Length: 382
Image (cartoon, rainbow, N blue to C red; front, side, top):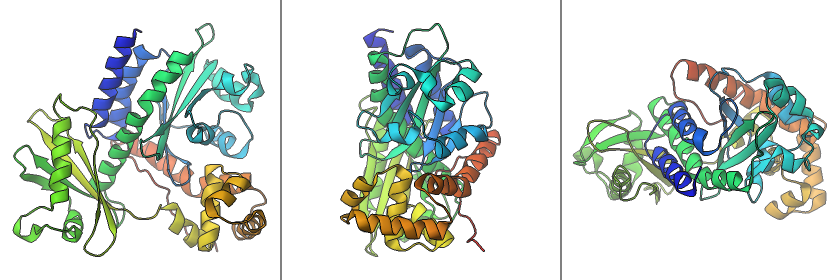
């Protein structure tokens, strides 16, 4: 594919990311764009990750309704090359299995069981990271034997797509949470037309509007932050600025930060904008770890970094504590969670709180329901 054709494909995906599509629709639309740009075997594997832990929350691949449990066990319990979190956290954010294994993919334990067994030979993984640095997913592309190798141009093209793919996934998850709330802190959603009239809103949005400054929703006056984000989103519905990101962070009347996201909705009835309002709350993994395992605040921070794949040296640098202190925290964490190693800790947290979310999302995809982006809470251990 020519450089011009790839530029057009990149612009198409950037536009799709701003359209307010649900997640499965977004993945499917992006799949159509990717197929001629980066030829690959079967369909792309689309994963969402929890940015706080970098653990998988959903998987979608056309024709594969359920990801095999052994794939997930290999990802979280075995040493291997080209793991999703490692690639997503890397400076480049994209890698092939051939690169990671020095040209010998058979060194990877999952090469035979998950790639060759399904007719493939090559694997490319790309972390879906927003310009702000949050990782919301991973894209996996595969090629069968006899095909040309993924080359530097392929990797660079996918790397350039990653921010738009991340933003589209984030918007899709937010829209799903707003339209089908899962808890009291769920985001609220307003839909505004091109004439700035509110066409619809979810029941929970009133509380967020009341917290935003310089508005008076009781008398029909929207806060300025909502209008600003809606205006940005409406502009993305036209041709002038297809990649503009509609986003604002506002200090509420109560003194907490509230985040607003805008998306231009796909519609035949003219330009419309969705504005999503949510609290800038701590990651959901933190209260989950406290409730399930009674970890202290510092132990939760150490656990979160372990889940992300951070080394002891990286944890000491991130938290400004000594190596000895990190080891003491790990000892206490292992005792409270009933594991003996970091790998076991990652596996236990994933299969207790994230694998149920993956299965829930698989069912939701079959039922045309919005997919969820966070872990499922578990009952405290007896």
